[in-house]
Length: 98
Image (cartoon, rainbow, N blue to C red; front, side, top):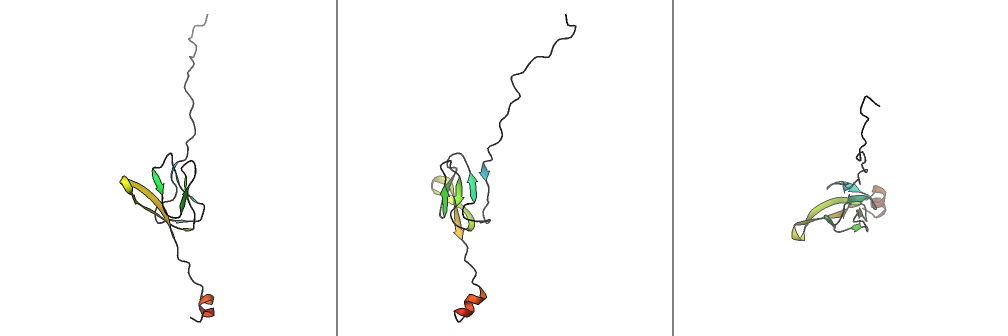
């Protein structure tokens, strides 16, 4: 007979990795087309101009530009991407006669 009590077993000790959800790009930051802006479960943030929504509710940029968050109907939020005005090269100005 053992003179010390054996160690009991536990049914705990497991954990799943995080899902990496949340806002990936904040207001005022630049994005390229295809960049993921928000990973979410359901439409916590709605898609606005120049963004798309994947079937898992991931919001991504359709064009390059600046991210903008704004109020949406019913107290909700929506995210849009504003296009950046492309700077005109000096050589193009000279060719245009400007």
